[in-house]
Image (cartoon, rainbow, N blue to C red; front, top):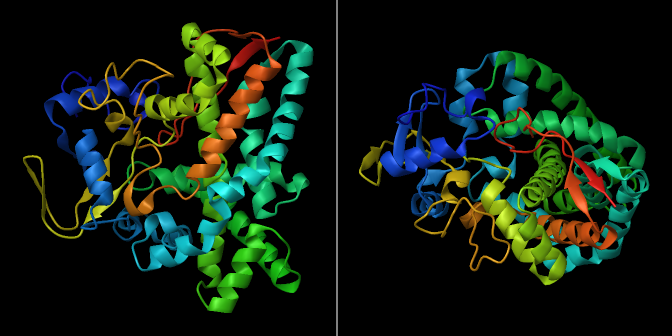
Length: 403
């Protein structure tokens, strides 16, 4: 660990509320740092993080290596993870990505404009009537799951359960290559197995009677082109449902949390709503949901002054790169009018987030409607806390007064 961290485990509970000072110390003193607690090289400079995510000498197949540290009883979970596009390399990655790409282009995403605005208004209405709301549970969490469920083809009455399953999948998918306890895996494995059975039934129904939803499109295309087996279909439907809701929840919650701590920036957005898309990029830069991503060196590679050996894990820390003073002026400050925000929260290179257009568009509309429907928003209470999923940084609750 970096000097002055008090011996806290990297990415452990001690860093949960404010990991950024540790990232800054590592970036300043040892930007390519080997950490024994996670058995991986930690990268905290923007240049290194960006370069590794574009470098095909670093594999995205984290599952093969990391699963060895866990009991054999969790093999079904890791078999599933190994089929997720985020955990694969070309040509498999390209085959998986090509099948879903069409559903998330900017042109397709913008057809949901009216539906997203209507959902925003429906979710805001009860809080506006009361004059207060818990923003995360009443708005930031339900909006993305409603939108992605509409796209994928999940009935309204099943969406609450989908959210529970997605949270379990996310906990495993984002943390298995650093810290994950047997207790967490035991709990999540049961829920992921239920999720798997549910999607098997959905796929069978789609084969019998295809609809306009994404599950039907994937099943039909995969069967026609012999492109994916059922395991790959299930894994990637699970991934899309998860990626399409939880990261956007965090973006909305963290974004409003940042604005409540910077009234001048909120005033700037109210005065000039055309700044909202830029503000969304700034929220992602300053408090992006995914803190780090993993890669495996496929050959010996020199990073900075360090020699990374073949087979070793590398963790590019997106959250650290996004606050690198070599790239961003006043990196710890919120500036919704900041120029050239080339943040890395969606990744970069071949594994750039497939849902990037949907996340941006949802957040843009959400903040537009939030400001259009309210004249004032203020924080109620103190001591904001984050959820326990370290690698999905999100406020647990955000109580606000609105009028």
